[in-house]
Every structure is written in structure tokens, then in C-alpha cells.
Length: 221
Image 1 (spheres, rainbow, N blue to C red):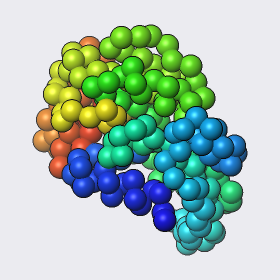
Image 2 (image 1 turned 90 degrees about the vertical axis):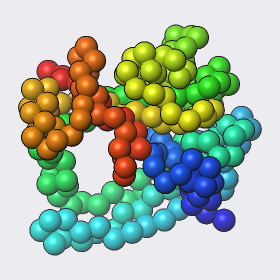
Image 3 (image 1 turned 90 degrees about the horizontal axis):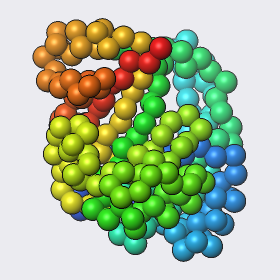
Image 4 (image 1 turned 120 degrees about the vertical axis):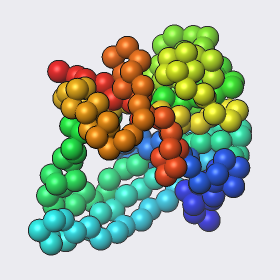
């Protein structure tokens, strides 16, 4: 069957409809990633290939094609990771989709929470092809364009000042965006009546309905 749909459904049945059931990682060779996951005993199911039509703001259409390979730990209802190879990337203008009123221009960090972080390090290290740095309550994995940070619940609450949520072996609990101006973000959130907290250099928006994870904004030059 479709591993993506099956794993997402299992996560939703266990954790509800809020939040992110998986983290996608870019790859140049999904077949090699799948073989690696199988050899490591971490495969979450058969590979998946699919295509879909894409239309840009000017009405130009193209077809996007992808190949996915899935990895997960032993918890069948925990979050998972998958590698995504772009077989055919649409040659259309995506500029309008990349402009945001809050000035966000990228994701710099994804934060995962685990009640058993030591058990998740091997999974994440193999899936990301990145060695773990740090130990104990905080571990980081360097990605090509961001960082994946693994925290235990206490470390998460200490850093962001919000509850870590329901216990889980692996759950993606926060996304950190880079923005051009923290002041612009703060004013926009206030004008939109969005509650937020200032934690050092971070602007933290707590999880809300339809969001399910904390959104964190950091000013980057």
C-alpha cells in the first residue's frame, strides 16, 4: 500500500489531526536512501512514486514528479521521516508563493521532541546522513540548509517556555523561520491579535488549531 498515507493515518489516529506527522528531506537518490533504510532496519514501507499537475500564477502548467523513501523507528504511530527525490521539477514561476507578509525567507531549524531521545539519534542520523552533535537532553543534526534539533520535553519547555505536549518517542513540535525584521513580525502578530512570547532572540507563537506546532521567528541578517 501507500506508506505515506498509512503512516500519516496511524499518526493521526494516535495523535489527532494537529501537527506534522513527518519531516521531508531532499535527496538526489531515493533508491539509495531506501536501500540504506532497509539495511539499517529502519524502512517504514515500500517506496512511492507519484506525479501531479502544477499551475503557476500566470496559468503556466507543468508536471511535478517525485520518488519517496520512508524511515521510522519502532513506534508505529510516531512521526517519521522520508527522503524526496525530484524526478521532474516544474519549470514555472514560484516567486509569488515565496513572498510572505511577515518577511519569512526560510526555515532554519526543525525541533523534534522525544521522551527517549537516545533511541531516536540513530534513526535521525541515518535518515539525514548527518552525525549527531551534543548529547543528553539536546542533540543537533546539520542539514544542507537547516538544523534538526532533538530535545527531551524538559529541554523543549525550557527553551521555548511552552509545554512539550503529549508524550511521544518522536514528534515534530516547532519550526524556526528566519525573518528580515523581528520588529515587523511582532507588529504583524499584534495587529492580527496573534498571541506570542519573546524568548531571547526568538518570537514564539504557541501551537493553535490548524497549526499543531510552535512557530518561532528569528531575525537573520
